[in-house]
Length: 250
Image (tube, rainbow, N blue to C red; front, side, top):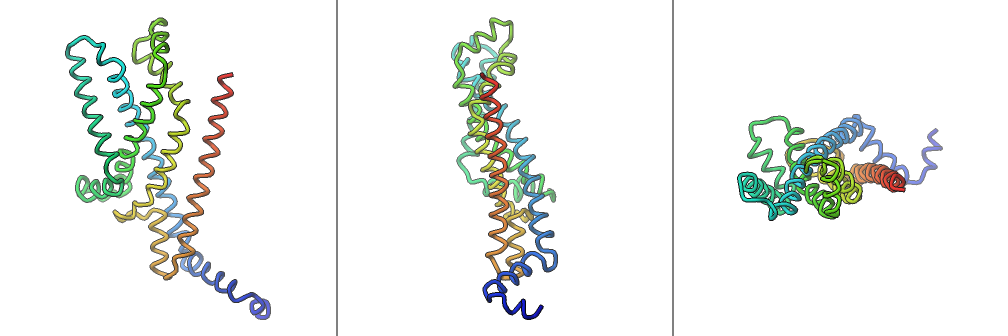
């Protein structure tokens, strides 16, 4: 056994020792990388849901304003639409014009300073940030739908909301699916800044390992590979969905 070990090249022995020290010793891979991965996926999942809900609401308001505001008769509804649209524009401008890490720190250290639930704060911060980008993506999809589709819905007896829900939004989602998928991939990677508020996501876990072993290569490469695998799997799912949508149109 000793002879077998001595026959291993020096560089390979060092690599094995580094691997053991960074991942096996004291259960570092399980305690930091895997637990961090769970937190990363948890934050991403709920932030995506929040981003979709916010994005759909804001996009419908913005698209409704752009398509119908000038044709509306003066009155209470027109004033309300103008006010709500202005709020949405301010939201989009502020969120898209400031870095997500700054938004995260403002949420944790100022807005929710009394809260100890770091995961909830991260979900809200990333979800609100993602909602701004999702809103513009969906709005572009809605605006790309021909006005004849709205008229077709009205001819079937649908009101504006029903036309939007049953005719316009399904077509808009097909058009913007690649852009939405890209936004969700960006969101997954953006959660790597969660460590700024002390949340032990996967990237923070690798940083803890580095601080204990004084070795940066192994933990950082491991995290990079895990992110890469997740993104590749998600991209395959999106490609499959696009193929299904194309087949359904035939």
